[in-house]
Length: 370
Image (cartoon, rainbow, N blue to C red; front, side, top):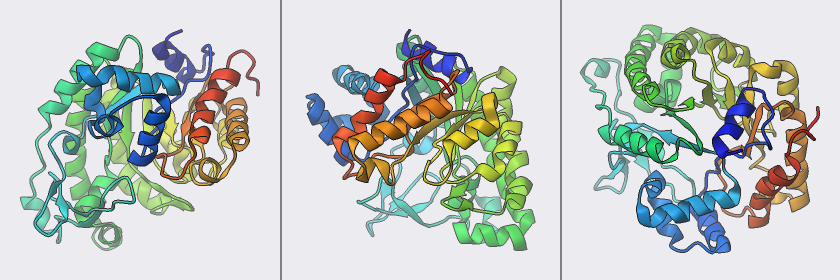
């Protein structure tokens, strides 16, 4: 069974040969360490070339060898313009600015720079604000990528920073929350403009021969939603429905990435058409309880803890967690096993490999039972 069939069977709640293994996101330090462990040279070039390494002939074999060592069964291709237009760019004061005019402070110890200044300083700025054009480079890349890999791997594509995140990146997090209470008309106007942009982008994505449609929008914290569920249902839910409609119309599975505890809105997400939830952080939500409650309405992608088990646990701890989640969430399909977020410095190589090794050795059907 090839990678593609394995994933598609699992998310359709059919038994593949083994539990699929998802993508591992890496900080550069463990990525380099793992490349050296695998005997793959030039890891820095591989890392910084991003997805483009899968199109560059001289890097392709190395990049695929890395993924095969981990057993990865699917590829994700984001089409956000900021990933394809040399963004963010440096400013004279050392900060960075992206194509959306958001300004960031570099943060060398984390995986992404932190937004510190936002273009919509007042509600009146919205009328003059111009959204960036779609990136032709993104879709040229996606088309070439699909031509190369769609027969062997399950390909998901879409975009991150979809609606809530895009709104607060443009306005500022605290100010957006204040606006939701004090100036809801402005928030609706802002989000409606984002929806118009995202719907057109979604239509362009689903025209391609992808297997899964993806949206990323972080709604959760360690202790629940970042905003009250009532506000999420007022501002986000009806607009997310429009963004997901092109994928639903085409009958595509929908993968939603949201960090944190989003259990209070899972029923809403299923109503919107979400069929796969990522990353399902086990320190704050119980994957077994979610599978028990939602049965075959929702697949899970992730579930392996990056906050405690991977950095501080033993290899046996990692194997046990992986097996527990495979048994609890992977019966009759329904699970793509992967780390619940980025692999950060300090996580032992042996623990990283234990995820894949456990899925390959013990995640074989039909031995998985509830």
